[in-house]
Image (cartoon, rainbow, N blue to C red; front, side):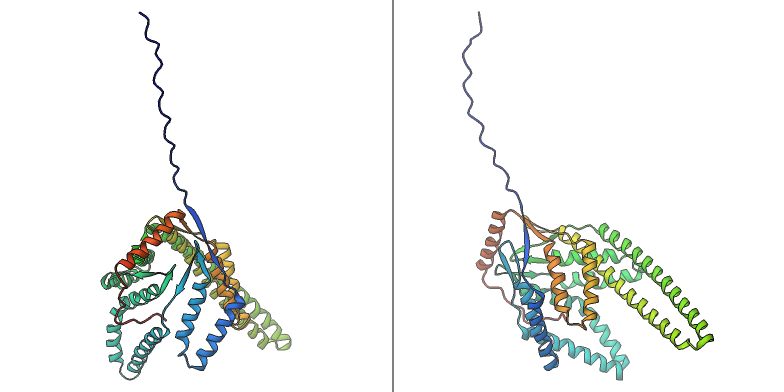
Length: 375
């Protein structure tokens, strides 16, 4: 018998596969300008001088409000809402402690030693207070940041590990730097959601080892160059003195060469520090996330070193008047390299849900001693 030739029943078409939402890179929009910020800055400086430093608390708030208000990302803006009076009270407290210590050191050295031993354990508390204050009064889309950290963990990170780094002649310093970044990120939160840090300590060792080797090479080359210049100037001056009394001119040239070399060393150190901080910042932000939201920072060494070095030269040449321009210039570059990576719909729902969680628990209570202890 022949097999049946009945047609097989038609299968329904497969359901369309849903495409996964694609994360979007939200770039920062910084609208600040050097000339505009100069007007804010010069008024702050003038009023701080006239009021013998009292206005510095208001100046700090105005500066932060300017940079926060000119920074937007993913359609949302930042705010800084701290009270200048709280900052002023914190600075008066710090100034009082400093004056008391200086008086004790002048008239009762033993008492100064006792005060120092008392103040050292307060360092972790100061760190927690300063970071917590700035975060609590920083907001994005009307929702505040917070910092929740305990004293004893801060004590280990900022005192015990620092002592260990000194005892190891700096060999543990990259680990301490990594541990501090981890401490600051892991205890930060936006609304009710905590940030997370997954950076690698090995990267910190690579950055610091390479940077220190480069710095040592620069210092040695600069020292040899300075020594050669001074020797050449001294030899020329000595020969000139025998012929026509050029000894004083030669000594002046030698001193000028030494001052120039010292300024070069200082500039090299500042540029070195900017390069190290840029590489560390890149790694930290690229390994920081909150929920499904990730961050990316891509500072380039060439531009960051050029901006830092030229800013220093411009500030010195202008006797400080170009400080606002330099600050805006550096801020604009750093923010132009920063992106937030998230799915647009998920970002909107995340912010909305965080706001609902805050509203559901009621207004958060402020701490009893609401002071900004950071200078």
